[in-house]
Image (cartoon, rainbow, N blue to C red; front, top):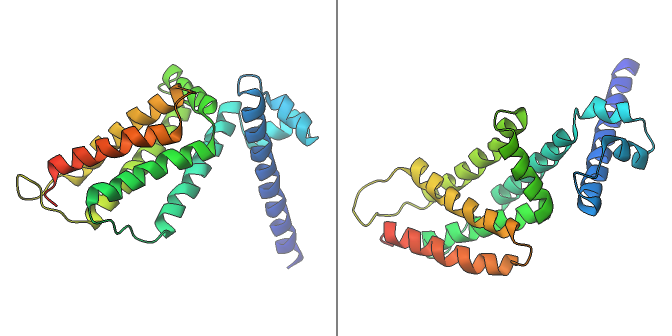
Length: 210
């Protein structure tokens, strides 16, 4: 019993240390920029040794990736637990979902940090960072597919449609508009919505006869 308690205590301590490293890294990334933030700087902020930080995360990009993935997991879980969408039109359901993607993404990190993450993915296309970063694309595309399948609609040409393909098209369109948002510091989230929502409605109204 004592041994189990000791293991449980060590596990909690490790979880708490990991959480404190992530919280500190997120704050420094936002305050001074990722390229200025070092593992040694994070260690100094927390009053621990630099090797301690490396024991939890092998690099600054690993820290960034952990923050992004955990932030998206929370956002996806919040979407699952919300009441089922009940707009009169499927296009409005999807527009609301995509607007949420944009809002939650900017809650995870600011535009400069997202620009760094995207540029890191472009610089190292075969890296583990990119492989795991791409998980977000798959999860969000599947979330769109779930909403599509929750609201069966007749297509204008009649018959069924490929939900996987349509979800991928919708996600690609959202991603292009979101990339434009993070590239432009002057573009507000509200202005982004004013572009996103009518375009998604128009796209789906061309496909579905609601």
